[in-house]
Length: 432
Image (cartoon, rainbow, N blue to C red; front, side):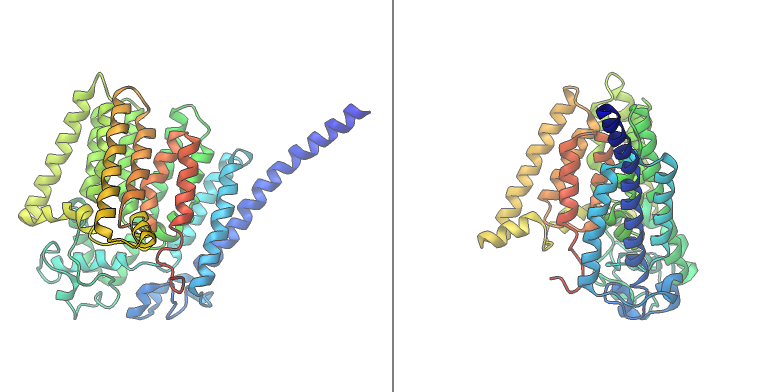
């Protein structure tokens, strides 16, 4: 009788486990619905682009349900979402593959329809495109300040900054110029959502290739509040960067070294910082490393030729992204906080953190050469650059999430989740 009672208790516990997982996912969907819907109101504080007005095309189709959302309320909702997201990822094995896939797709569609949360960068992309197509100006030498009468000017954020994006992103955006601001905005939103889903798909396929259950890795990327609220809703080009990077990673897993070197190098054609993954894939491609090198070199030459044809030598200014950003400091970057707590000048602190990153990079590259998993080593190096960078913004977490998902390193996953919580407050109005 005792055995029957124990068996009954075990069966009841097993039966409730899926309900816990599904309940957490359902609660997460509700919180995400509130985050996406409530800010869709004219003049919303958490939609920075409404400084240029609140037309219907900006607020999107969810505007009929928007009631406004303050910065502190959004911050609280993001923290609740982060906690539920961690729970769902932890219990991912209790969800069916279909449920996991549809949750990711459905939430991407939801944030595709949401207004651009917490960033105006997408309008900077459009401004650079219109500088070239509508005004005949080079976006690497001119800023939105040079086109104050253009319809995009009021919506753009960094009006005094020239473009720091590579030619593989800048030239295709020229096709958006004739679409007008609204048309270009929605194209970029769709591209960001589709690219983000592409990343999740590559993570899923990569996990299967490694003989692992793909549900937790895919959900670690696809349900992150930093991905949905920042990358998808705000249409950041980080999605394109990591789509190309993960195409290289997946090609590596398929044992196609030339493609691995080529795709991962092309990512640097969108943002120079994406090149961090390339040496890890190249070093791990032995004994066919020459093919990986050839793929990387061919892609690099293609990018240089593309840039020179489109912009001349001015295109090389795009590769100043890392150094120019290090001249600034984010309030929650580790170098900024350390300098603030110690009450010292930021420059020597930044230099010390830069040296720490170099040390980590050398160590992880050496480990890769000695046979360590290049995805895991690239993940630790990416974590290091995020911790050591003086310029840290939430959407940069997408650089790390797919690598951590495929590294299957518990410590790296925990560190990634902790860093996700650390950067959650950056850019939220009314918090700092």
